[in-house]
Image 1 (cartoon, rainbow, N blue to C red):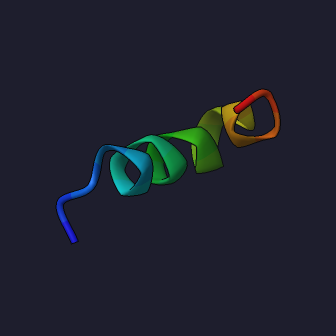
Image 2 (tube, one colour; image 1 turned 180 degrees about the horizontal axis):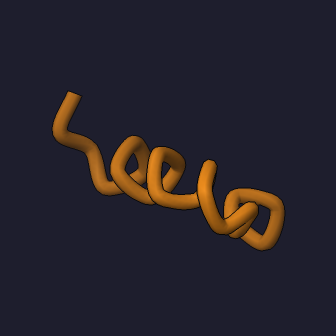
Length: 21
């Protein structure tokens, strides 16, 4: 899984940015 969303989600897990996406 090399999708940009997957990377963003993984990074968001530590910044809670996934909620803004």
